[in-house]
Figure 1 (spheres, helix red, strand yellow):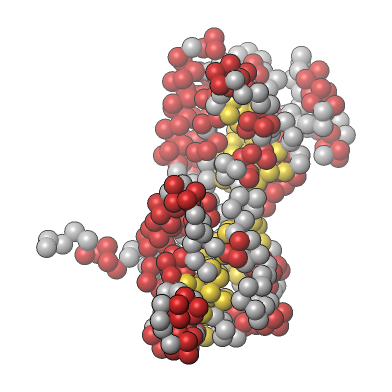
Figure 2 (cartoon, one colour):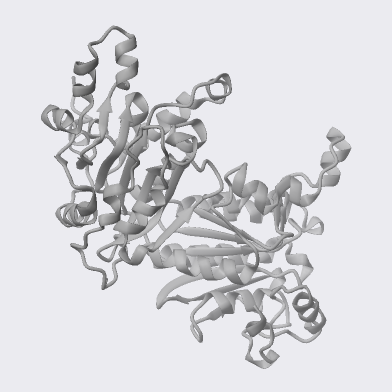
Length: 489
């Protein structure tokens, strides 16, 4: 951050306007950037073109509290708006909304992603219902863009009231800085109505939304780090829903073996391991961009590249709750699978789950509904689905993790994997023969039943994934059963 703040004002784009230098200096003293500097750091150098700069009045830099820009990230087009606290506290009013709506419409017409940077005091009270009308127009455009172009929000300050409803409409939300927050009701309102004393950070800070509410996909110590990670995420995403997954030349050997995987899974069923080690081993250059790492950590989701292709990764995390499937994990995975399906990104699923997390809290929390959503996400997906069973795939939980029955294109298993309705101990407790129970769970037995396509050597997992993705690269996006969905009975 220091390197950017130390630049002379003339080198920043856009630089502080007359009368706003004091604001910029105050921001820098707090270790924060101005709206223009945030946009400059996000976009490729020299690529930005500001839109609608004079809509806010005669002052070309006033902008009515929002900067709207088109530019590029990594050479690929993007539309960006950044709330500007130096003008009317970044509040949303009629002209402010018109600028954002025009940018959204341009992004949809051009089929390019939209990024919003939020640092605002909310809606402008003196604008009255005109502000709400503008807010509604932004929401309509965001809804129209959903599943068409990727939408990303970055919260680097306050985001209260009605404005707090905008970032959740995005596909991904990042938060930065210790004082970034998002909430519908301010702390003073909460105290007056409920009697609860709570700070803005406790009510809707980055920690709350990354660990508890799941609204934030990532939380970072400062906005420079957040912007750099946003640029990294952008590199994994397609420009639009018909653009196909991004591809880049990979120097990593497609047939590379990973001997470490042969001993990754401990011999004792109760012992844990870190599934992220597997993901790193099969990904190009061990590059894995994890999302929502602090929420439902018994499930792992994120983006990687395999032989240059972007893929979505879904996995059970053995080191947290033994990888059991609960409501939060199912909700987390289902939303991610749906995003990948909308934008043509293949999904790799790594399975090691002993079952569902039991308990009254889970049942009352609607675990059945959340797992049902996960089942639907896989069953409705038309992108390539490749699944690898690492150790355990028991019952409905194992079946919910991209099983053949849900439409997975290729399903593999490691040699010691166990696949069945319940584990051997459970089957024996119900009166089954111990030896027969164990035999039915083996990977070879699942292979002969047709539940999996092949038993593969762990160290060769990357090679099999590369071949599977090559085979499925031109998979039809129309599910066979849908061709007959409207036939008369």
